[in-house]
Amino acid sequence: MNLLDSRRLVTTALVLLAVLNVTLLATLWWRESCRLIPGTESVIHNKKRLSFSRQLDLDESQRISFDKLRKEHFHNVGAEMKAIALLKKQLIQEALQEKPDTIKIESIAGNIGSRHAAVERQLAFHFHELAKVCTPGQRDSLRIILERIAARKRPDRSERWGENPSPGR
Image: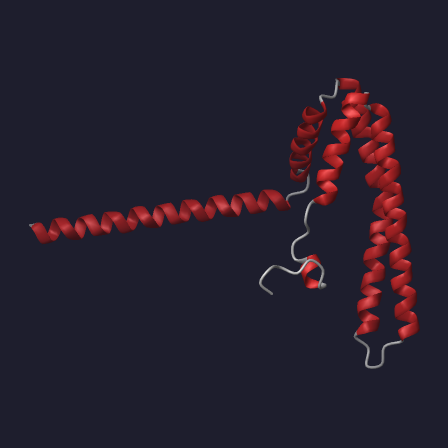
């Protein structure tokens, strides 16, 4: 009888672990599928926007203005970002040629750089427009938030190019 009880306990534990695994996998799958469904990313952006609005203590009219400015900015920058992506594809194609044309590579790289500069210019004007909506106290908070975003470290980019080497290397 003792042997039968121990088998039953092991079987029950295995079934319980299998059910927990299936539940965990289903949850992970559901979260991933929500991220890929069009429209669900707006929920994530809304949470970020609300957090931004709370940090600046925006009133309703300011929040509406910020949303309008944000949509305009992303609409305007979107074309430049698509053009940059296309240029990068061309750059990769040329770089992978048997005998790459260095003049063409220089031209494409220069074009990418000028488009990045245009995006940064538009971003600065966007920040200016946001600041015009804010009160002086909110501008100080906006400056702190934007500096924090700008200073956010991109993973391994600086280390990859030899800048900021890690201690011990």
